[in-house]
Length: 478
Image (cartoon, rainbow, N blue to C red; front, side, top):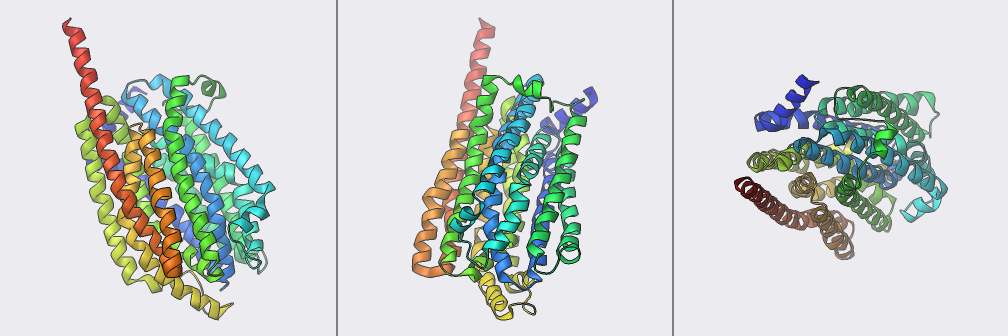
């Protein structure tokens, strides 16, 4: 255990920043990319049926699914960032209670959410914009993935966050990536072999459910095994030991992080409602684009999540020079990825979108019209990529430093002040293309605010630490 602890301290304290970031971020990026790919595989296989209404249905279900991420952020990022800060303060004995509390809290919230979605499934989907042509498909997908599967997907993400923030990024990646790979294998099996024609959406949902169960089981056993030599725990008795102070700190970061994701989800809900006024083909087109533009976002979220424990540890230990260098290097990497992705998606928008919907099967005319719409939406929305990265990285920086208020302000400003009003305004004046343009406009304005908030958060942290050290030095002299 001592050798393992020394290795983790070297990772956080002295390892060259590019190597340390790669150690934590590369496995996370891989798991993020595999998650994106298996979601894209769902869309790809469903699109082979040539039925844009099936794609529109899965796009509507996405809004219900995204709240899973809010719950995992509440306890995974809230608990994980607190654990990293406790380790930076050499208070490893307290991290076990934080870990166990996060796991059981996430499970409880997921169970309640699943029950509520099951009870109000049809009214909820109608509210989100489901038509008579899409309600059946949307109900099938949501039932298996959310009503039955919410607890498994929520726990998987929460456990991965907790592992990652204590230095076990590779193990977290194996759990999430393994589930994604399994889903890719099971998709065609359930969609085209086991279930009859017309049940492709149900097949994709069942495959996703099974893969989430397997991922969750693996991560539970991984945390249980690691708990013997690390500050991790799954014991209910440890969960009950969490101090009021640590619970408050967990929620002070976790709640804003959950609100951030919840507001993002609300933005998708509003977008689907506005898009439904333009017809199911517009919903299907935007649904395709939301899968594609997640590729650069997945890389940048992975970078930001890899950065978080490094920033949190060095913030808590007082090595703010290393913390700044980590933030700066992460920004360079993320902006490079974003700009390259923007250029490629602008050039190849039409062939990329055409991969996700067959125009030679099923409703060929409707499918061809959907592809044209999707290519246009993609060229507009991909402009947001560099600005979205600045929002992601800034939010994770503030979470790492325990600035829950700053994170919440950023989330509200980004979504409520900018993105949502832009959707209504641009949709009114420019129609569906204006609705797509709301994303880059909102992310640009939100990114500017985020940079200002991070700047003041770092300045405040450095001033507070200098004051604390000055007081300690005066006490020693006395």
